[in-house]
Amino acid sequence: MSLLDLAPVIPVVVIDDVESAVPMARALVAGGLPVIEVTLRTPAAREAIARIAAEVPEATVGAGTIRSSEDISASVAAGARFLVSPGTTLSLVEAMDSSGVPYLPGAATVSEVMALVERGVKELKFFPAEAAGGVPYLKALAGPLPDVRFCPTGGIRVNTAADYLALPNVGCVGGTWLTPADALAAGDWGRVEKLASEAAALR
Image (cartoon, rainbow, N blue to C red; front, side):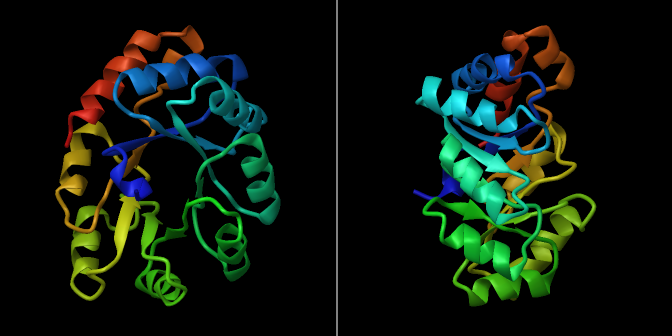
């Protein structure tokens, strides 16, 4: 099954304290969001992926902010089951294609989308979604590129996610609102689960 069909929202997570990774992942799964993107923005990210992969088997954990072949190999070795990049270069998409795991390459322009389609990639991350044109932009892409599906990420909130999910070329959205930094720092897993359950009900 496609990554885009597993859940309406993929939590996009920044983890500073690796000890929060497992309880956070369990709260997201309990709330109905089993697909989790851990961004490689902190020193704790790779260990967080490894712990979630080992201790929360019901979660599908992936690595985000993939920018190099080194990021790819280290993330897959840690247990990442999918990869997400903010943008795409030829060498990066080749490396992701060779990784053996599903991936969502980032694109923000029609030319970038068409270049990926030429390579046979038709499921993409649209980033930064709100800054790059949001819902109207994706509506415009559906006409000339009806066979491409997106996971828009960047600036999306719970009150705007449904607008994206209503589009025929959107499979899911990525969101950072599900794991607020203060909730992670406080270990408020009930709040995280509640936010996840609200998001899971969007579709």
